[in-house]
Amino acid sequence: MNPFMPTCAEAVDLLTDLEDGALGPLDWFGLKLHLSLCPPCRAFLSSLHRAPALLRACWTEAPGPAAELALAGALAALREGRVPRGPRHHPEEEAWRALQPGGDAPTALLLRVHLGHCSACRG
Image (cartoon, rainbow, N blue to C red; front, side, top):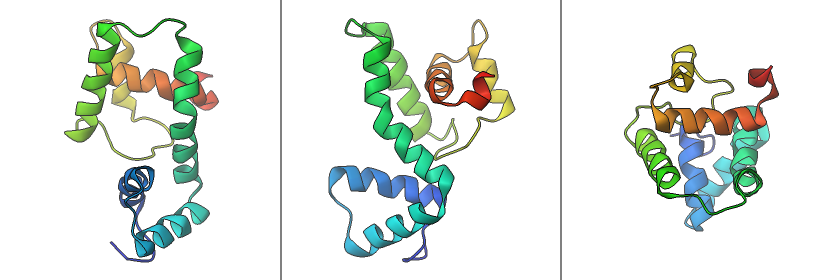
């Protein structure tokens, strides 16, 4: 990683450290620089900030065990590299198959979150 300008994938990793309050000064500077020059990463950060409110608006009741399992599976898919990490303006074509009957539930959950704030993909 260039200490003054991280890549998009590195910036996504740095966002986690930023949220945890564990970002050093050089990484903080690099992340801020990257975000100032990268609209997709700014949109990704914005979507992270909007996610809790979107979820509260979608569910009036606490999610059940199936939703918790789907979220855990989606996060595991990200960690294991089965789903591309980082901001992608639009998911890859084959990812949309997860929304079909019998598709991968964690990927489908991530796609539904994406569709919640991407008017280009909803249209």
